[in-house]
Image 1 (cartoon, rainbow, N blue to C red):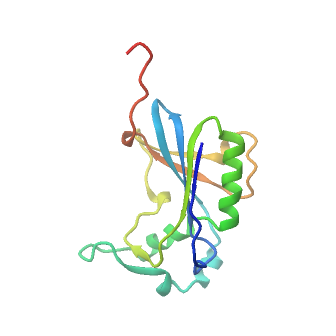
Image 2: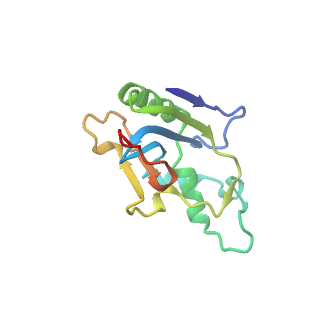
Image 3: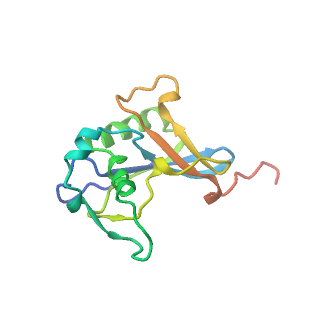
Amino acid sequence: MKLNIITSQNELPVKEGYMISLIINNLKGHKDVEVHLFRPDWDEKEAKSYDWSKLLGDPIDRNAPADPMSSRKVLLESFTLEERDMIIDCMKERYVSRLSAINSRPLDFPIPMGLIPLSEILEDDDIGCIRFEEIPNYTLPFLVHGLYILSQHEPVEEEGD
């Protein structure tokens, strides 16, 4: 399993700001599926204390309306450095045989407005969410979910094809 972990060279402007993704060898008949991890909940009181004018940047598309509340969620769904390390340790310990890589990097600040938070992407036959707390023996002290899009990955070839 590869670990591709990038830590910010500078201190992040808030304690959150680290993204994590897993590459799962085989998920629902598809190989090397990238699963983007996120926090499904956060401290609203803390979120209200942030100076969002410094954390959010220009819209991605100046011709389209950008919801600043959705853009805020992109940050609020991310992890602190401590949480990132706890998640990585947990995934290495529990899922090492199922993972080909764990990737993590800091968000770029300011965060462009117009990004869609992972928690707002609706599930269907192609898009799914892993709710890790529903897996037996969940050990992290906070919730972690993982979003995946199966159509972005090759199907697993059946033996004999």
